[in-house]
Image (cartoon, rainbow, N blue to C red):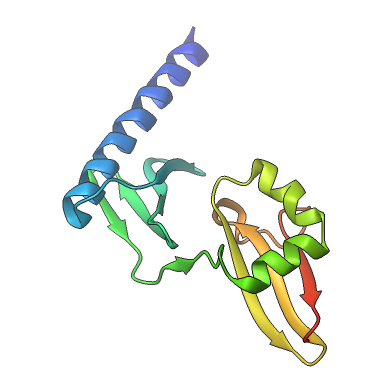
Length: 143
């Protein structure tokens, strides 16, 4: 009974927090987010992590129940989804398409290396995880 009550409270809490964050985002930007996640933070039921799909970038932040306020980080994560190197990497390595099947908030990092440009696909939800199949990387050869 206690576990069921806890699950119900968490579901209602998540839905309410999502509505509050979506309202604050829409009020601040004038348009609703393309996608939104308000997820739990370990060991703190009064704080949530926020990811907003803002078109060509993601905006992350924190929602706190005590203030009922979302604070958005000033540094955004560019998607690079339409970059030519992104398309080349997808054509070169099927691992990218496998990750895109489950990725809710995918973004691409592009960096220069002597042997070519390194293209890495990540999901914002798991950006800090460096092992375990949560990203894919390939080198796109320079023409």
